Image (cartoon, rainbow, N blue to C red; front, side, top):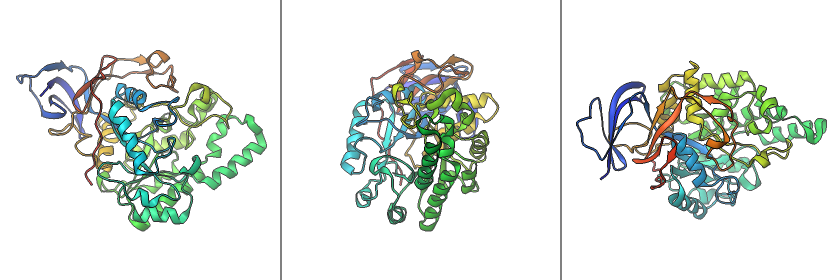
Length: 445
C-alpha cells in the first residue's frame, strides 16, 4: 500500500495545536505522533512552518448538476473545493430535475463517483407529495433530507402544514431546512415592486427577505422539531434574533437541533450592497452589521455549530442583471477556509474553533463515519495551510466554472498548500492531481 509521511506539522485538532507527524497508509491515517521520522514511507513531505488541519466538510453546496451545468458541474466545483481545503461536501437537491426519487438521487451519486475530486454526499429532496419516496432513503449512505421551508422554485417549496408535520414526525434521520416565510417575502416583494418598479436597488434585498421572514420560519421549524423529537439542522442563519432559538448547553453530537452559519453572512453586511450589488445577493439575504455580528457571536459561543458556504454559482451574465432578474447565490467554496483563517488573523476566532466548526462538528452532527478528525484509523482527509503566505483572489486563480467571486480583489493572509482526500495527494503548490476520485461518505446511524 502507498504510504506518505508528513513531518514537522503544527497539528490543529480536537481543541489543541501540537507539533507532530502523520503517517498515511493507503486511504487512512496509520499513525499520529511526535516523532515519526524514523518510519519508512513512499513519500515524505516536510510541513515545517505549516499547520495541518482535518479537511473541511461543507454541509451545504449547490453544484448544479444535472440540468444547470452551464453554471457548474460536480467536477468543476469539486476542483474548486479541493483547492480550498474542502475535502468533503453535501450537495442540495434543487437541480433539474429536482431530486424527489431514489433513482434520481442515485444518478447524482453515479456522476460524483466518476467525476468528483472531493468526497461527496447528496441530500434527498422533499416536496409536497413525495413523503413515501423520501422515507425509502438509506440514512447510512445519504446525509439527510432537505426541506425548503422558504421561497424556492417549482415544487421544491414545502408549504403544506400537514406535509411538514408528516416529514418531521416520520423521517428517521437529519432534516436540513432552508427557513424563510414565503407569505412574508411575497408581501414584501409586492410592496417594494410597487414603490420602485423593476429598478429596485439591491440593498433592499435584506428588507424583502427580511429578518421577520427568517425568524417566523426558523421558529416554526424548531417548534415542529421539539414537538416530534426530530433531528433538525437549520441552514444559513442570517439574523441575530434567530440565534436565540439554539442552545449551547450540550455538545453538538448530543443536540437534537443544530444550526449552520455561512461565510457570506459572517463576512458581509448590507453596507456592501452598494459596492457589490447582485454579486452578494443570496437567500437568505445578507443583512445588517448587527445581524452579522450576532451570528458570529453565536458561532463563538456554540449556539451555531457549523460554518459552511451555501456555494451556489451562477454565470456572471446571469448575476449582472436587474434586481428581480438576477438569481440568488454565488461561489464561495474555494475561499471559505482562507476566509475563516482571515477571521483568525483579525483576532475574532481561534484556529481550534475554526477546525471545530468546519471539520469536527459537521462530522459529529451528521454522524459521518471516520472523517473530520486527525485520528489513527480515520480517513486521511487533511489540509496543510500556510498562515503567512498572502495572495489576492483574481480571475486567474478562481477554479469555479462561473469564473468570478465576491472575494475578487481580496487579499487573504493564509494559503492552502497541500490537500489529501481519502489518502490521495490531491492538491499541492497550486496544482490538482486528478488521478483518483473522492469517495462516497458513509454515516454511522
